[in-house]
Length: 426
Length: 92
Image 1: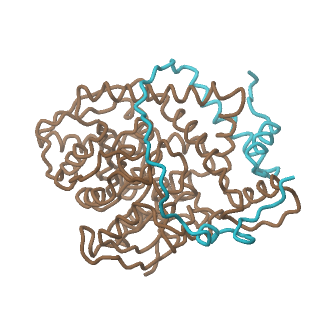
Image 2: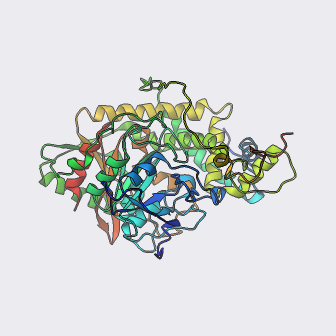
Image 3: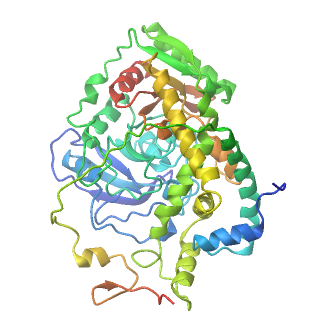
């Protein structure tokens, strides 16, 4: 199969271990930071260009046991650090729904594979929006589960306290089906909980929003493009016509969400990526010096600019004299965001915003200003800070460029957001 | 605080702590970008102290032997090994 959009880093034909099960006959693309036994897993990085995992991630075992067939390892921003899939060491992915534009990221290959019909389903990971962002930009469905609903065992860590594996699919029903397969506690990941054990999310795809209260987060509308807001508002009218009640809420803490997210994510990244020392895996760099010299040379060669940027800023935020100013304050902001969401869910069932405040940028347009790219995550990162579930469902388009509707639920509110998304689906 | 909170020496210092070599062009680029980004992070000063009720509980399991990777599997991606061990550069 050709790879028109560079959606894959490695093509793989792995037969399912079983020929029956909920995913029998379905093909799946798996993001390249999720370990697949015997199939190269690069994280989109030169550092792991030759890395072949000796074991499967729990989610990979589960999709194979359910009958899915792997078609390839999906392209991604290096180690998940980016929102356009342009920081991949294996080249950018093009958006099949909007040629010449980025597919979003970091799970851009996963979303593009589904949008192009090169895979029926895909797995991505979402640390600050990395499933919902590309789902919105490519016009497909993507869901970030409640923290701990899905095992992270075998997922190469970027920021552990924020990230979850999530499904991408053409429809809400297929995304729910894949979530049913991957959700559930795992003895190999002590941060999993039993919230997804014996789940039946597919049954929530009934389109019944009669009496459901949807709170529009006004703080996340203010910074969005007016054309995007217009498409978003049309989708609310569509939901209201089916019996949902629309109301407005404001969460003051969200003003600090992007700052808090980046300080926490970078700090965790600086610690997690310390493992890449060129000894257990990584490029073989010839240097004459001692351990530290070799370590620093391997990391210069193996990491791209965005990864270096985040490791350095994370190291800075955790260093003596700055820890209280940045990291501790970011944790306060995170707790504040959680409290704000808890309060909001006392009066509404679901919260809503545009998934992305903008339409997909043209390829190459946005890469030279990192801060502007970070600000593009304003609508997605609050959910990760608060450990909540959220889904992005296609809402329409602006001159052919897809727009996503984001629906956020309370902890373990997957059924509610899936039900509401199924009503929003057009 | 001065107008630019970051100078090239700061970037080199942090890169040293993080064990990442940088060339001069990268130092120059990061100095400029870090100033912007850290200035943006300054807004965290306005966040009030929040008393977070922790949802976290310890997860314990019996300390029993389970199946794990074989030594060969664990070493399979290492650039250099010797007698069943990872081989790294000298420490000093």
